Length: 247
Image (cartoon, rainbow, N blue to C red; front, side):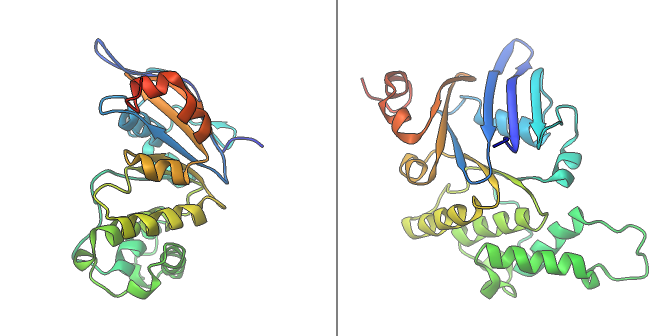
């Protein structure tokens, strides 16, 4: 099966610093692909390159078979690459529904419809409702987003991604700061979403990673030192030494 997102020889240099070096990975619909590594390993730089926020110094990125290496972040988002950030990026004063509608509106812009209120756009409203249902937040639609729990806000960020109709989800530490119950809810959501999306998960919670990931890529100092299924990663001696702290 062709990868939805394919990366070959991807590198990023900042002056004399090689932050990401010759990274290769494939993202497939039906899989959660986790990228792990200590702080400074290059994970956030990698996800920024995949989303188009940062350009590549060398290498190629293909989305659904098409070379998108030179595409802007906006163009990739329109094509179906959605992402979340480490920090919460919701509109706290708006309702949950309005947050999703605004995300959908950005994806399905209609600059010519000057005579119609944005809130009346049927396509944006339908996309927002579908995203809320998929994320398990339909019952919270009319709640002010800023009053939600931390975990629910992170779910809302995923819902806002879904409202843009992505095929790839790039999730940067969505479990950060969550308690056990909130983590369980997020993992259940990711398990549902992977059936119709290719999911890249950058995460520090190793227990959660090994519960949810179908494939894991381990980075150290910008380089991939191992990639495979969770059991392969558990057994890899280089990973045990460099990341899991075992000798």
